[in-house]
Image (cartoon, rainbow, N blue to C red; front, top):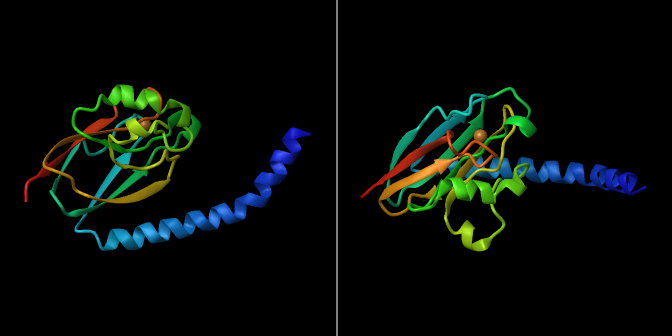
Length: 163
Ligand SMILES: [Cu+2]
């Protein structure tokens, strides 16, 4: 009985949620066009980002598009891209987000979330997301995939140069 109620609820919610998602994606695209610089990173079924590093300049707006170009289902090989503040233990951070591996891949803890510079949600095959953010203070910022088991190998570094 419980299952039936849940299924009905989902069926009612789905169209609205989908529309909101499409609207959000369109909004993100429009915002990305206004950005100073566009960066595109892909992730594959071998748990590899195609870019292990990229460089931006302090203060510029960065439109970061992350695409999962793999074929494996999201439940087995989902990916996200999370840029972390310098000094963050990326492995521990990823572990803290494990419970949300089907959605954000981020921890729920507000304190831990302060370490996030920018993040996409967990994406399945052929999905992509663009996030826009302002390049923070000069330094080296590690980015990782927080899907369980990926952070050890699926990572890179964003370098922010001074203006
Ligand atoms: Cu991954």
